[in-house]
Length: 289
Ligand code: RI2
Image (tube, rainbow, N blue to C red; front, side, top):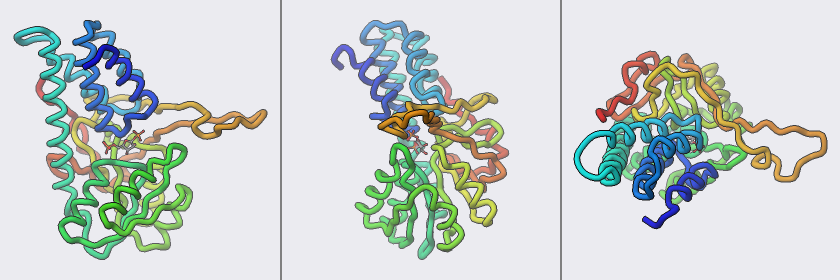
């Protein structure tokens, strides 16, 4: 690792060059190891990383796990931190495989699904179902302002899946008119009471699905569960992401996450199985340090 890797990784997470709840958690774990190699104070590195994407508890769980693991054990601290980071990433990969395996039964032949943003857990669940021979359709929202939905539709189309891109504001109409069987979301944070913190727009889609009695499933590895009752932080990003050219006299507010209440969620699929949202407090990430 070249010097300055820590700063480059932090910048990559902050600017969303590295994005996705699992991806930023893995990158943050690596950044802790980079900080140790560069001789930085791990407490400072942890604080810097936690400030990059404040809505995703996955990043906090990863950073805290690596920090706590490296506080004890044999050998140089840089080795201990690197081992802890690799341990977290291995766990993260296995957890996602577990979520995908447990979500398989949600995606069946000749049904239509809707998803929002770009969740690796959701995209890989659709790809795995298609690989196993199931044939279904997916509607994906473009997910302004960042347009993560374009990543989703490209990945699904590349796998040969019948996918349709829609604008975010069409989600309610599609749910009410296109016989959608279920909505699948990824997750940035699942709070202790079973609320979902996810990409902005999620809560509106979930409310529409709930009113139409369309089931809503969240695919979330346990490292996305908040360990204690937290007041979700809603990250706000620069206005130019919404309006590259300012309009005189016009303010822009750019919240990039929102909170979906547990009553609008049918089930949360983890690597340990599916739970009702009100059981989230039993699941929070407690990987033994
Ligand atoms: P994985 C994304 O946030 C979205 O909220 C999405 O649901 C979640 O992270 C995906 O997480 P952003 O990084 O399923 O696009 O990929 O701001 O772990």
